[in-house]
Length: 199
Picture 1 (tube, rainbow, N blue to C red):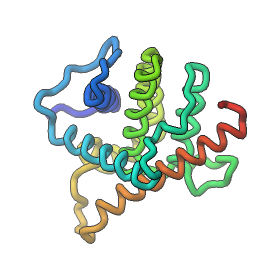
Picture 2: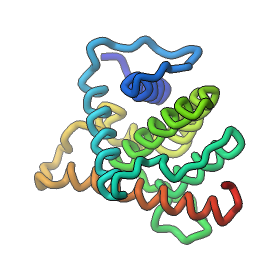
Picture 3: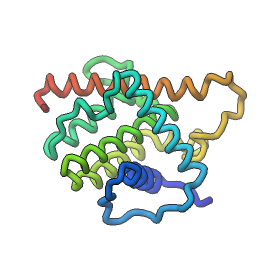
């Protein structure tokens, strides 16, 4: 299996997410889809779907983007403020500090968020934002998370069992932390955005 790149992972996942919702993917260039899906693609899709379902359960049926009032003007600030809080939760309200809190659950949450974000854009007649969201996701991962991903077995390593056996609840716990972080992040980002007058 060839090495995965951030670009190929993000493009494949966003294309899959749009196609699974019956929407056309507006990428001008994207790597060919593997058919059937690879074990990595299946694992990523399964985990991001769990995050979306768990988020909806925790938020009484609301989808991740239900509270968004996206426009082409505020899409970048909405995306970046949400992602910042996702990976910097636990820091002070001003968001100071450079410590990115990386984990497989948070990375899956980022991809789940990016996926529902592009679906929301296409459904709300803003397909021109899809490539921008893909690039924002790629840029954030490469700048802030890629070193952690590489230190933990690369993209494939996200879904491999750890070398040291853990309790059976640990994988579920990691994903639950990702879901909880995404829920808290979305609510907080929307509140901060409203306070800053973005909506």
